[in-house]
Image 1 (spheres, rainbow, N blue to C red):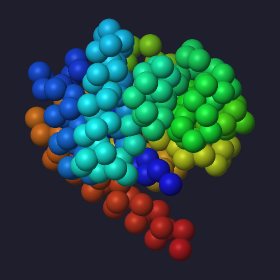
Image 2: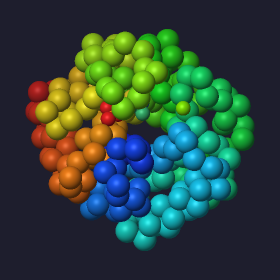
Image 3: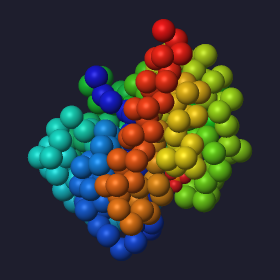
Image 4: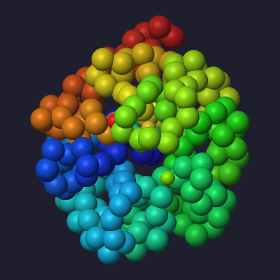
Length: 218
Ligand code: TZP
Ligand code: MG
C-alpha cells in the first residue's frame, strides 16, 4: 500500500541551484512519502540517467518511497520506476496501462469530477486533483478547483486523492480536512532554503489534520 500523504514533485528550475538528487534526499529525510520526477525540458538520456540515480537513492535510503515518472512511460520502464503520472492530454490511461502492466502505479491528474470518475474507471491507482489553489509553478492549469473541488471529487470516487497546486504548510490542514489523502507540492519543498525542514513542517500539518478528521468522525 503506497503512502501518498506527502508527495514531492521535482522541478529543476526552482531548486536554487541544488541538484534534484540532493533535494530528494533532504525531502525524504524530512518525511516525503512519494517522489515524482518531473522534467519538462531535458534530453531523454539525461532524464533516464537522473531517474536511475534517484531510484537507486530511494532504494538505499527508504525503499518504501516510490519513484513516479511524470509523462514518460518509456523513462519509467527503462529504469524500473514504480509508477507514472499522466495528465489529461498525455497518453490515455487505458493505453498506458496496457504498456506498463498491472503492477506499475498509474496516477492521473484530473480537473473535474467527470475526469476523476473516468480515471477511476480506466484503472488509475490514485488521482491528482489539479490545481487546488492558484500556482505560478505550472502555467497551463485550469481555474483552481478549491476545497469544494476536493469535496466533490471525494464524494464521487474512492481512489486515493492527492491535491496539488499552491499548497503550503499554511493551507495543508484545510486540504486534508476537505478529503484529500495527501498533498503534492513543488515550490513548498523544492524552493525552500531547507527542503528537509519544509517537508517536516508539511508532514506535521498532515498528521495533525488527520488526527482532527479521525476525532471528528469518531
Ligand atoms: N500540476 C498541477 S499544479 C502543479 C502541477 C505540477 C504545480 C504545483 O506547484 P506548487 O509550487 O506546489 O504550487
Ligand atoms: Mg503531463
